[in-house]
Image (tube, rainbow, N blue to C red; front, side):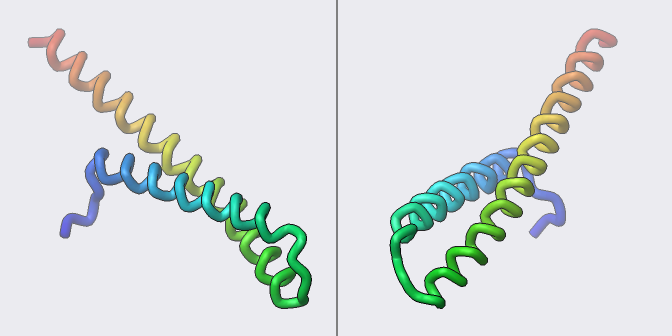
Length: 82
């Protein structure tokens, strides 16, 4: 498998991660009233990981947009030069 993911694969990954984030947020909301030390601890860990994951997904998405724009500019420049 290639070391670099294609743009389509990266877009799919971002989309999939957004779904996981959404599902996790829904789970956290649904268990907000659940009692118990283990549930509370798990909710806290999930909350921290969710925030970290959101930041990484936003960074990945921004990088993907930047690379896509750069490729489009390079293509446009090439077409105009030829």
